[in-house]
Image (cartoon, rainbow, N blue to C red; front, side, top):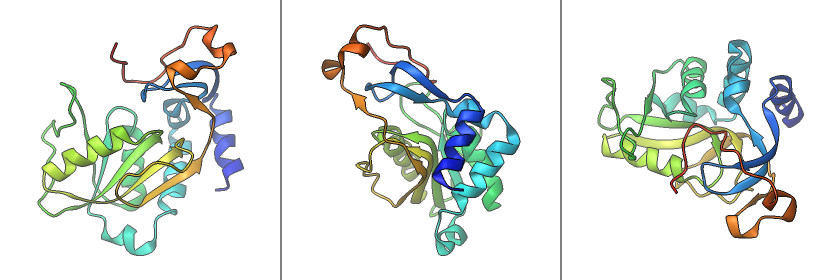
Length: 195
């Protein structure tokens, strides 16, 4: 899929939002990609996962034992990546603020893991989820994401393969442009912000 075809999928799902958004990273943006909306159509989710799997080098695809994604945002695309790669897919979640395995999920010692995210901005959630995988005995080989919002600056410590890079500007709370500073921010994601 080309970048234009990928963005057309987001537009068709009304998943490219415009306004004033407070991202889970704590930064502000005038645009927000609601991946849950683009993934609610199972055919579309499957197409995007197949395209994302196609970004991986062939040798890496064959080395993967397990797909892991962080809840909540990565669960659907993680599941679809598992299907596209023919590998089991599980997720980590943070009921007390730190990612952990629950629901009977286990990672065999030495298992080769592909981390799957919906959107990466700063990479903090990804790195924290990788820490949980490593603590459980897995080896993270790489990460994929539907969207890279980091402007190419994210360092995850492993190879990173986004489906598309979208570089909408983001702002720290003290650097908001006037048109955003004058409107209340909406928190559209699944994770609430700490005060």
